[in-house]
Length: 289
Image 1: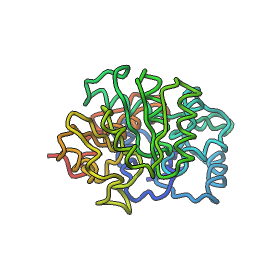
Image 2: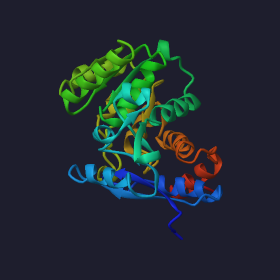
Image 3: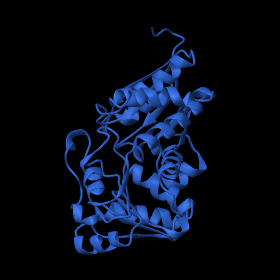
């Protein structure tokens, strides 16, 4: 039951029908006995400024941000965490006293923790190929550069976005990133041959694009780790084809969980009940026993 004392937390973005964040966060709030509620709030380019402005005056603890608002929302905040400012994308906002809004990015920590659990490679000795150049890609590539990645190759449908991300990584972290034009599939395939990890952050494979994949299966090779930021469905076509080619695979559920536990702690000031939140995700995905 929502009362005048209930702390509100929204997820902003569009579309949100596939998101499982509400189940994860609400399970955590309930387990800890917190009078908080997390709910989806779909935005448009026109409505985002008004929604963020309204949140300042309501009983919000903060809000999460997902595609396509992770970059656009920054213009409407009062303050940014240093790492979020350097990477140029926000996925978490805290409402501070006086309605001031401070942005963070927990995607980076979530990705690195998830990757370390499934991959034994060395960042300084490895090459990473990132498909896509949106908000999630920014967090992932900047986190990789921060952790000492040897080389990061970026390729997305829109070359100007790839260039912008490469410039961001090289200018704010380390000069290790380069771009491959999406139209130059021959060069992209050649780059993949030398990659230790390939990452799909395009969103193709989830939502309206379930059953699709952004690349030809010939891009994969044995020994490569294939990561897909998608988690719903938990085994998208991109990962299925990678596994068939002899790759290790990792979906986005770990990244979602660990970025979510960081969010929980920012919004509540309490340690997140990680096992409870993981179980909520697994149940929502039909993975629990």
